[in-house]
Image (cartoon, rainbow, N blue to C red; front, side, top):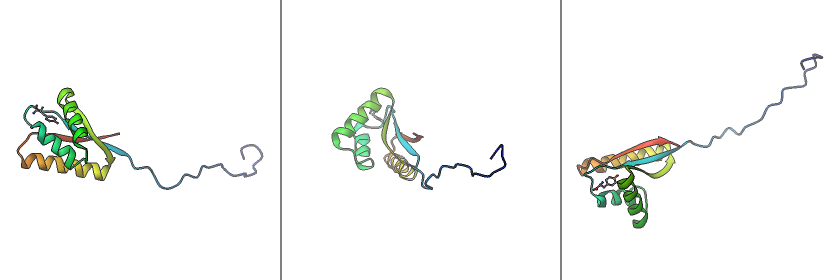
Length: 102
Ligand code: TYC
């Protein structure tokens, strides 16, 4: 202790060792050339959106310039970004996709 020299111990909070993983947003960017149907197919195939959800996200990106495909742990998000960029490159579309920490 501070005044009588008796050690009464220091209160500590025990926190579980496990940590919530930080979450990462996968962002899709608009451009003037990638076909709308290609973007919808990406959202359905890679992000498991329904046709209606994929269409709504694609239109939102088309109108605002940017949009969220989903929020995932880093490894999943990184893999999805790589899959989008690979599909776009193969199809020769300029579609861009990136990660953003939540
Ligand atoms: N703007 C594109 C077009 O008019 C469609 C588009 C939507 C492209 C979303 C990219 O992330 C995108 N064909």
